[in-house]
Amino acid sequence: VAGTANYKGSEVIKSFVIEKAEVSAPKVDSKDYTGEGITADIETSDLYKVVTNNGGTNVGKYEVVLKLTDSSNYKWNDTVDETTTLEFEITQATTTISNLAISNWTYNETAQTPTSSTNFGEVVYTYSTSESGEYTNVVPTNAGTYYVKASVAGTTNYTEAETIRSFVIEKAKVSAPTISSKVYTGLTLTADVEENSLYEVTTNNGGINVGKYDVVLTLTDSSNYKWTDTEDETTSLEF
Image (cartoon, rainbow, N blue to C red; front, side, top):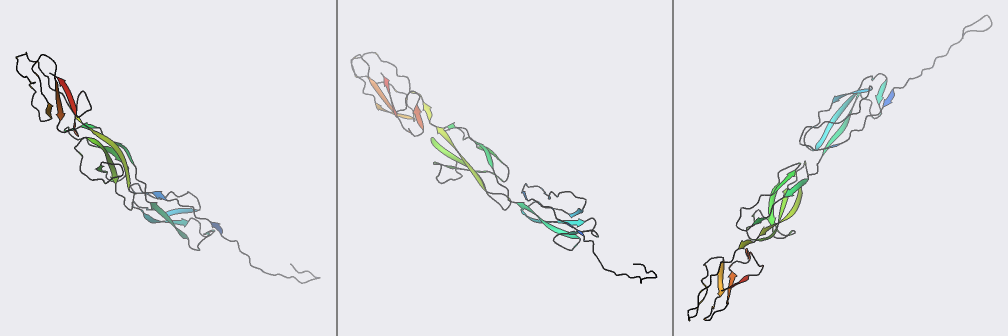
């Protein structure tokens, strides 16, 4: 206060502070492994700039460093430093196997090859006689119903995965031979049956008199072969 003739002048001094405005660091979301280099997605702001965001390829944690653009008037809410360090994480990805397929085939034909696709790793195929049974890399050859498993081994970067599909090796078809008739001779006659390793003649008694007689053939390997006209192990022909 300025003095006058009536009073003396006076003054008092007191300090005050204009505090720096606080800046909150942005949230850094993690990303799943892709097999390629990944960096963090950082929210843009005029208050800071990104000075380090190299990221990485493999699963792990990586530093992201932000620096205030005006450290005279702003400060981080968690540190007095001009910079703050955040953590960016690459997490383990989930492996998927899709489109597992294998065609059926017939006994003694060339085995079909399974196919599938996966987003990570190498697919290995194994086989079993039951869905929950033991799987091996031996491709089945005998007729029957089987299961193929497509598997990808897990790593630190991606999970393991597997999927299963059934397929059938069909029995090969066997055609019965043609049985020719014979003219009566007065003697016992039997049918002339073409020899074949796929069947054996189990009945061929024939006869003397004019008439029709049964010829029965039995498959030698009914597990892998079947007659074209019956599901039975045997077929009866007429002589």
